[in-house]
Amino acid sequence: MKFTFLVLLAAVACPWAAEGSDQESDCPARCVCEHNHTRVSCTHAQLTVFPNSLPGHLHFLNISFNDVKSIPLLHEQKLTTLVLCHNAIDVILRGTFNRLNDLHTLDFSHNRLSSLDADDLDGLESLQFLSLEGNSLRNLAPYAFHRTPNLKVLRLSNNPLKFIDATWFRNLDVLESLEVRSIDAHSITDDAFSLATRLESIDLSDNDFVDIPRGLGSARNLKILRMDQNPLVKLDSSSMSGVRRLRELFLSQMPQLEAIEDGSFWYMKALRVVEISGNPLLKVVSASAFQWSTSPILRVVLANNSLSTLPEGFAEWCGKGKLDLGGNPWSCNCETSWIKRCRSTEGLMCSSPPRLAGRSLDEVDVSEMTCPLSRTLLLQFQDSANNKIVLAGVGACALVVSLVAGMYLWRERNTFRTKGDRYGTVYYVHVNHKSDAA
Picture 1: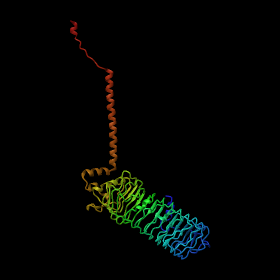
Picture 2: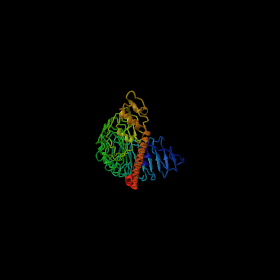
Picture 3: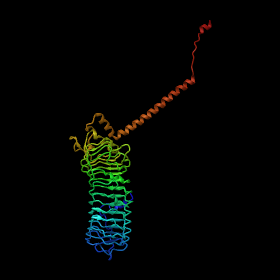
Picture 4: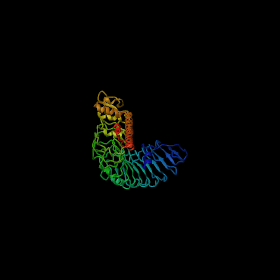
């Protein structure tokens, strides 16, 4: 994605580190200046006020992990990255960012903001990455981000917002990634993302959704959806109706998810990655949850659930190394014997029957899995890669023999016909010499 470099830049909370220093007299007290004073880092400096007398031509400024309570009007026109995370800032004064025309990254996470007005971000027309996660935001004004038309990544997680307002995304025509984890939301309006026409990734993890929100359908270009840690109980044929164009789906660590029913992922022709792991109550995944014949899925993760059995239809992915089944309490019987054909069964443990409990599925022979004799023989044959090679060799030999025999018979038949034409019919005449003498 276009915003990959920004996501990597802020993948961990405040990953801003110094790279060496240029200690000169005009460097602010308790700070480290580097790269000819174009980078200033004052992190963990026990600051209570914003540093003054900043160097000219400053590009990067890091004030993280201090106790700064307010920020002055900033005049560093060349500044491109400003890191203010983990401070005590509770308000943004009007005009604070007016002159920061080149700023493209602003990390304001883990402060004490409780609201954001429509003009608080005035002057940040070049901003591409904004993190406000971990504040105390309860109220975002309508059009709160309309001053940041080039914003691509917006992080609002861990704020008590409780809802998502469609007006927040006014003028965010290039927004690609939105994170709204842990905002105590339980519903989304049907038009929530209608203004964010290029939105590709949404993280709604750790909220209170009991269903996949229908409002996600308003994000018409949505490709990646994270819904981990929500109280969904089941998925059925209507659950994903609004997000059929997804490429990646994450539904993990759901404390109440019990079943994935028929048709749950039908008609999702672009789906590539599905991760459904760490769900302690998940015991049922239907054989018809996916459309096997049309699914382009590259990887399915069903690890660390409570699955004891799984339909054999999943074997289509298993043989290609696409399926992760680790950490489930498998019942090692005939129904799960197909799993032994997986490319890797390392770490898969038997939970039942009692005579096999605690054993690795790798070590259990098919003959121990209480299958009918015909089924056992078939599985033993399929379990051996050498047998497949032998079968192919036998088939090839049979074909060659058939061709040779056919050619021999054809040649013999033609030879017989040729001989008949060469010699024709022979007539024998008996001559009586005594009669002739009389």
